[in-house]
Image (cartoon, rainbow, N blue to C red; front, side, top):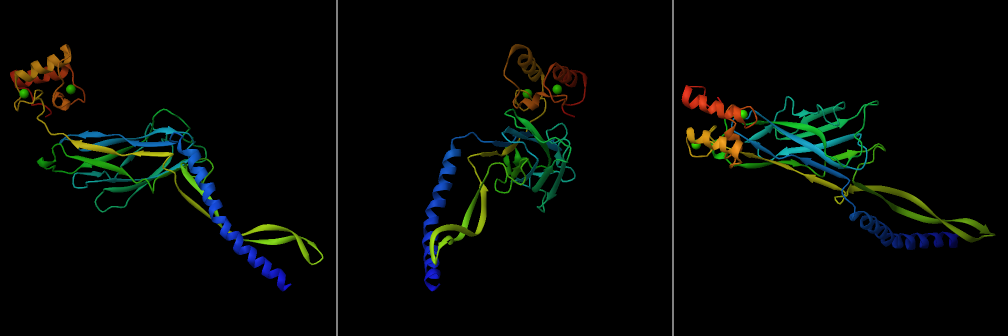
Length: 300
Ligand SMILES: [Ca+2]
Ligand SMILES: [Ca+2]
């Protein structure tokens, strides 16, 4: 009996030493086999241009490529410069018309300045999951607030809306499997026990795993997070040619742009004299009325 125990202990040590390169080889093969595949999840925040008059800014968050169904998600987002733009904390997330429209969505403000939020979304029992698609899909719309008053020095300033890659994940229908994550199991210890005896001699041994631990980490070969940025554009509304004054030259400039393929207003927003969201003939009429008939000033 003493001899048998010594033999078991010896085999434990030998087996543990041999296991390390085996696990490493398996994991390496797994990474190599998926590295050439297209990302299965693209999460993109649209870029945005802001003007000093903006009270609320919208950023669309798009799922541009999903190869699994999505049943829930967690996204961490941060504004890089809370002194200029903050999440609108009363209602920072809007899923109206999006692929998560019927889902339960919540958010939590983790910053003291409205710059860091966590968004959780999950479908109910009868709600529709987000289905696999190669077409861009709107996941949600973020709403942010320009700090008021905005300093003049912020003209042409560019900031970022950052996705925290390591805390952001999506879950598919085989919950709790996370899309784009690698899972692997490591044996903490094994021993061999005898499974067939002839007399007091063992003729067959078998591995027994004493304990295992599951590990996981994002597979960045399969995930693609693209942040958005915002730029403050400062201009004089109606000053389409950027001359510093609003006059008849701007009317001519705008007509040439609309009807004769001339250069666009600089920036384009300066041509939206009636602040309708589009630059068209209505803005020409608005400018003429302002200059020659005492109408309201542009963007008033
Ligand atoms: Ca001008
Ligand atoms: Ca307009």
